[in-house]
Length: 188
Ligand SMILES: *[C@@H]1O[C@H](CO)[C@@H](O)[C@H](O)[C@H]1NC(C)=O
Image (cartoon, rainbow, N blue to C red):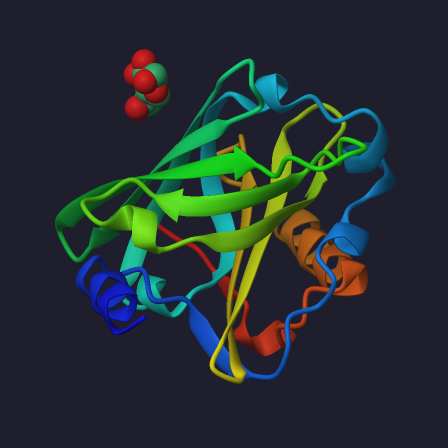
């Protein structure tokens, strides 16, 4: 675990840490995710609008370039700027194999050297029916604490403020256990 934490810090992706247990991820999914979600339709470019992720402190211009494989695997090139410095990591979302199939559940890891040590249980909480917005939540219990990450992203570069607020409210309603004031707006 020490090694994994070291890697997380090294690659600047230490997620938010609060005490407590993770919520039940499968039950957080919207009806759309559970019934009709097609991961291949998520492919394309997104701009992050809101997040909770301690690693993103001091960063700006967060974007996600999603590619999908027929297997349901999603790969996201997550780009940020720390000041003038651009930084990109590839995050891989491997679908959880469960019987019966249960869409929207993933194990997320960052495709960086040693990234295989970091595996975050992740749920696609919701996706807009036209695949123009997505809400992703990850939670991992580590030694009595839980590390949590939330990403809300839209295809539109500049999303309407009220719409983003609505997506945040829906995420909390779905069971995202992060205080609203700890969910930050992304900007560029
Ligand atoms: C997104 O990824 C695809 C596939 O790797 C690539 O062809 C495309 O140029 C990328 N788009 C941007 C805006 O980086």
